[in-house]
Image 1 (cartoon, rainbow, N blue to C red):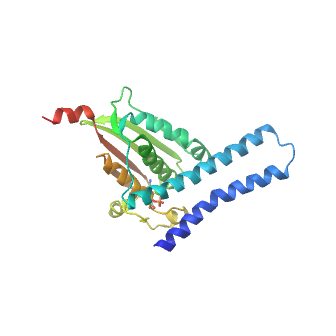
Image 2: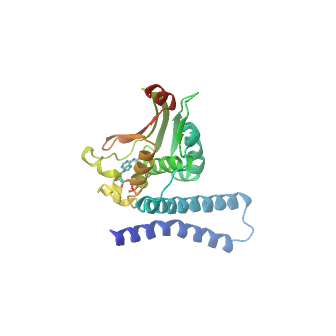
Image 3: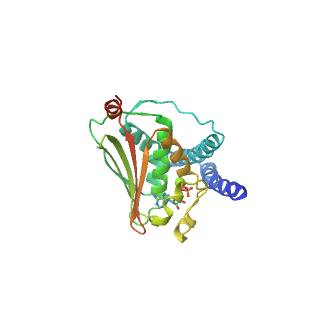
Length: 233
Ligand SMILES: Nc1ncnc2c1ncn2[C@@H]1O[C@H](COP(=O)(O)OP(=O)(O)O)[C@@H](O)[C@H]1O
Ligand SMILES: [Mg+2]
């Protein structure tokens, strides 16, 4: 497992590094590059650097979780803000992967108690997976709503889907569903185990609905403060 981990991480680190190097070479070879090209190169470098950062954050987070030293800073937050911030961070990746995001965010939503950075990592992981496991229909739907005293947030894709009997396992560290398609996209299988840990710390449930070949929906249910007050005598 360890050697597989090292080789996959190294591979995942190498891809963005290779892109950055190619761009740097292009910039040196060609004199007097048009401003529009320079802008595009700069965007590429920024996007690839973001990708590296996300990868390293996941590994660091996982290592903190494993050593039991991951801590959380809770404050009053709005899920819509987390979604918007995450999309800003992932703008480049979504653009380069030709993915459109459709949002239906609840207006006047109620706040929840959460660690904004940790929840951003959660949404980044869910959206990254949605992108990675999408097929021809390159679309992601994100919604927030309130249901039975809980604040809900869903991330839906129209990709390869997950076989029902595998859904439980995908939250285990290093677990990846074996399929021809999944083997072509790289990954270490840590994302969802981190997601699960962070959500547990938030007393947040996660539900997965998926149909093979049609797509998957990951839904998070956060306890609402207003509801907790009602339920405590
Ligand atoms: N949106 C999705 N569509 C299809 N399969 C998914 C999706 N999200 C996760 N999976 C499956 O769950 C596995 C574990 O996900 P994750 O922990 O994020 O690891 P990784 O993305 O590095 O493979 C993936 O390898 C994939 O098989
Ligand atoms: Mg992942």
